Image (cartoon, rainbow, N blue to C red):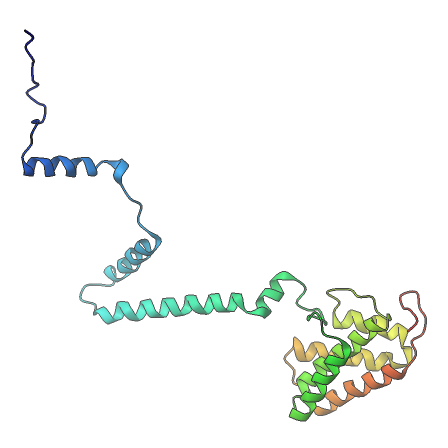
Length: 214
């Protein structure tokens, strides 16, 4: 017959309820059961920590006010980053004169004429000059070069239409001033761009090494 020996420091084979709970708590307190706090929990602890340093007795509405303001600022930043203009600036040249795909010279002219009826002279200058550049591309006077600026287009168009060179460069300057300098256009500026577009549409470009016959 074999005699068994029981260790005196071993837990009982049938622990009581309190002893079982203590053993379970001891087991769950081990590092392998630790759970990392979520991002929201960390943010909340950080925010509460800010209030702890300002002194006791702050009303609960102060915490809610700061939380609402923080969320509003976050939403504003996200909204600005998702705006089409912001995406365009991140993805390419934000000074490109033709920054919309699928819009031809006729469409730009129609938009400019609609702006004339509304007295929106800034839009007339912008879309009127875009119509000039888009027409130059359609007539193969200009290469279809993405990212071309208003100034670059004016240099090439001036070589193809030397008689209108001064007017073309002046229109490009007004385009840049209105779009990037926030300098409001006048009715005289707007109608000058439209008149230039009409004259160039009727003119025959001169052949140059960088231009082509219309």
